[in-house]
Amino acid sequence: MRAMLLEKPRPAAENPLRLAELPIPQPGPGEIRLRVRACGICHTDLHLVEGDLQLPKLPLVPGHQIVGTVDALGADVNGFRQGDRVGVPWLYSTCGECVYCRKGLENLCERARFTGFHVDGGYAEAMVAPAAFAYPLPASFSDVEAAPLLCAGVIGYRALKLSNLQPGGRLGLYGFGASAHIVIQIARHWSCEVCVFTRAESHRQLARQLGAMWTGAAGDPPPKPLDAAIIFAPSGALVPEGLRALRKGGTLALAGITMSSLPEMDYQLLYHERVLRSVTNSTREDVRALLRLAAEVPVRTEVEPFQLPEANHALQNLKSSKIHGAGVLVI
Ligand SMILES: [Zn+2]
Ligand SMILES: [Zn+2]
Image (cartoon, rainbow, N blue to C red; front, side, top):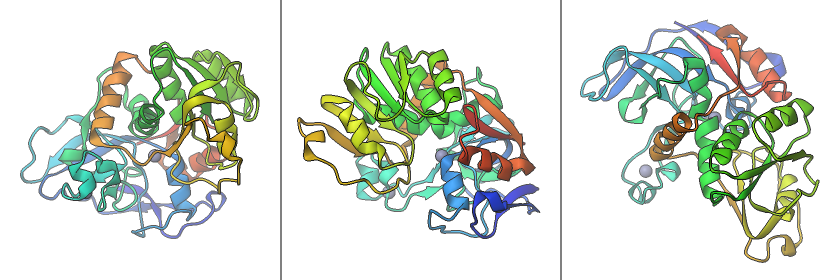
């Protein structure tokens, strides 16, 4: 099978992924094999090909927003048949035994494994995943439209949940990429007002099309204080700006897997019971809830397709904020 393989992390501009011919993986007990049809590209992919994250496996096939068709079943697989369309997200497996797994916080599992990180992912024609961590996808989404739901959507949903936004509340979004363009649609569905902070005029335009009541730059005061805000951009310098825009008791959620250092800041920004919290991975229930919600809204994903061998180019465009909505490899 063809796959885009990372042998040594390098800056995206140096084309770190190489088109390679690999053996087709075989599913073990409890696993299914997918013929991959689409795979979303994510900022985490960019961080791992560039070496910002310590990699547990090399060489590695990245990709963790995978839409495919089941074409082989390992022993003891129930609930899936050949030909079923499924999605595979970032959370590849958990131990089921640690204190976090037992508390319903499997996103924090001590022995969690991640797709396209601990195991080969979806920048390939086929991949293998545990059946217990694969999900049927709503029929109303095409393969390419469904891909961004699996990480951008799921992480956005978890960030939204942890931001404590209530129906009718006022939400701020810092950065307007793949995740934020899904979150805004859910927030509008809940009759919330949304303020979007982003530099790129094309992102501001898309935000207004999707129902933002206000767009501006980080540091601009929103028209009214926010009940909740989410920072998607990996910039610690945005944290004081996000806190400054919140009302008393509001929550600022940080959705990135990495972020530059937080600057020293005045305690008054946090005082009055403002909450600052990170968002880490997601649970299987988050994935199911997001997929249900996406069909109900219905969420429209704005997608820019790339062919598999163009993965380096897609990551370069992601890095320079040139992608409109979400980038997806079509396989
Ligand atoms: Zn665990
Ligand atoms: Zn991701």
